[in-house]
Image (tube, rainbow, N blue to C red; front, side, top):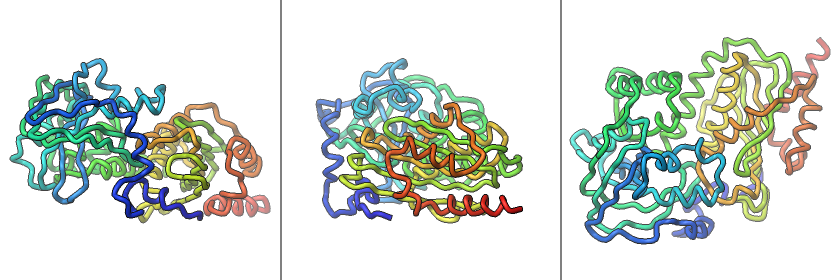
Length: 405
């Protein structure tokens, strides 16, 4: 596996520098041009959106995100990935940089009596934008945030007062499970997911401490991956009872410079993801970086070395298998191309995989022609990434044995 510190770090500071030079250059797209003076306020329709940080854990910052002056019609463009699929990267950054993070500082478990957090929870329940106003005791800090999991965010400040101007529109299932303190978080997430509650809504409910028996605040970056993982595992319980697909099936496509080749092979469910960061893509510099991770029929035992992207990509494949009521071994290649020049968050992986799986598939009688067809669309040579494909080698070997039976 080729080593690239920036790929492993993704802005976390592993290089020892106080500021990531890759991320600094994106601040020119920031749309907030002024700093709110001491005692200022922000009013707008929250998408709705909340954020819980991880720095200082278990003491964290938490609160709503508010786009100043946004109305109910514009607000979804600040938070809903489905709304971003037709936009340019720079337009997404520009819009997201307008989201003001209104923070209060508290312990992850001691928040029941904090009125600012309770109002943030009220906002998080809603499925529709909510007019919100926050007052700040100090000037906002213009610290535009980027990384591999979180979507870009704009200025932040410590709030001293928060008002929810509208009545939140809360789905019945959300209302029921938010007040069911006997339901385990994984069961609540399963029930919400199967009721077609968007993963973004489930994520903010988990993050802001509204799901489960032993409730606490969960940093947003952790809750995103937790929801992708738990929703996927829940789908997998049903998929393991489905019959295997009959044909080797290949899907291709993607979004935002994230190209996917997704191969389904008639076998019991297992999953492998190959990530290939091409030169000039965000983080990769002048070299190609190739990484891989997989799970066999026994499931994933440890956290993936590919981080949240592994679970986001796997969820798309599991959604497809659940839809067609089949199971298969899934071999997935994600090629990150120079078109992906700024990090937008792990939602890109999830949505790009889903987009690929909406395209018409190709079917094959054997693995070799499927791999050849796949390689005609990938820009990274097959010989470069084949050594990383552990599960694929096993599938090819098994197919060879089957031909003699």
